[in-house]
Amino acid sequence: MRSRRLCVLVLLGVMLLLMGNVPAPYYACQGKSAGDPCSYGYGSSCMGPNGICQLSDSSADNPSTVDLNEQLVCESR
Image (cartoon, rainbow, N blue to C red; front, side, top):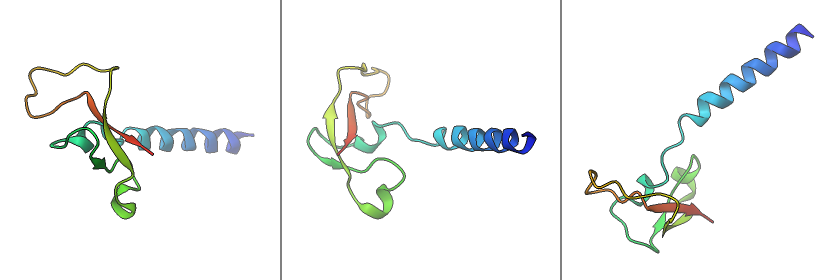
């Protein structure tokens, strides 16, 4: 029973660490326009583009970041 608890805690810790390394979806569309192909996620380096840049209504564009549009996000297929 004690080893099962330890295993669950280790798996939970590893999962939380991996979730912290996920990049923001708008960084994949930096310098692109709506409809352009984009790569997002861990498998994007070996599989090529796996999404399309689309405008999102759920987030607002930060005016202090002129070069980056936070509303243009990479949505995977």
